[in-house]
Length: 335
Ligand code: NDP
Image 1 (cartoon, rainbow, N blue to C red):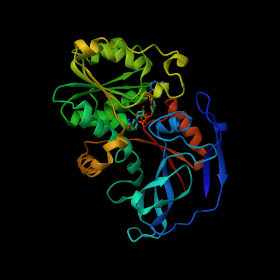
Image 2 (image 1 turned 30 degrees about the vertical axis):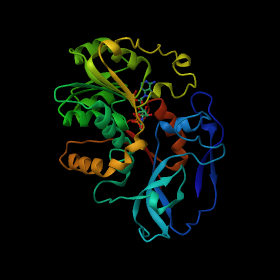
Image 3 (image 1 turned 90 degrees about the horizontal axis):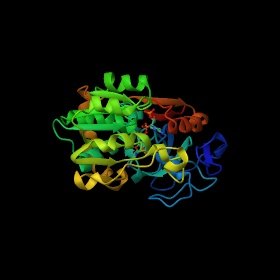
């Protein structure tokens, strides 16, 4: 079993030396457990938080332990009646080639329905995040304007497409011309804005009547530019603030501007709410998946993955994702 361990806690942005590649024996499943051979690993921004020894909604990865992630793979050995060798499953654990999991922690997936890697992206946790955050907080209505940051990414791409399906206008913010072209032309957003160029004129042009829903994935300068544009009764879906994940003290150390003046929250009767997809999202997974498969089959839902090859390349892909070098949902394909 090849594994990547957390060798030390990063100081600021992670570097390759924070990770360590190692070999151990392939574990054996006990009664009620399944050995999963990983085919795709999911690299997600939250894993940066798990590398710090800070109080959060989840426990940090211990030093010397395998890096946390979710994986899609095939059953290599089963000691549970629900799964047999060769079955595709979602629910493998860790930056490693094999994991032993309780059968009840696994979700069966059908590779004929959709490519297995989509269970980590458009049909998995990031897609579910988009769906849940819109259902519970964003609640876009016909004709409203929804602005999405990190719009070409795993969560953002689904947010904008679902907003359009719900009858809203979707404006995506992404880094660079290639991502912006993808957001507009392939994903079908109404407009795309490059956050590396001046934001104010582009937001003025794309949102002349203001913003009803802002989907926050990024924080920092993007948040500061969008926030003053809220219309009355706007909703701010606090999904994440990746621009600040590499700095324990938040914005100060990155040189990012301070946050917006929150005064208008009262005058405009804004709603700002955070959420964690794992709280209640998976209880609605069946409804989400059925809706998404319908959109995918009808050509209403596009998706893009950024596939790194081989476990040894996971640290570089992860470090790159935190800097915006991924183009689409970041996964690692294993042989
Ligand atoms: P993405 O696929 O969107 O990848 C991250 C992207 O963030 C990069 O490609 C980059 O896009 C953008 N980015 C990184 N640094 C900066 C920066 N300094 N300024 C602006 N943009 C930056 O990741 P996900 O879709 O997986 O995650 C998106 C957000 O959703 C994250 O904040 C994540 O933590 C959060 N999340 C929250 C969940 C919840 O339950 N609340 C669940 C899942 C995700 P670009 O090149 O366009 O700038």
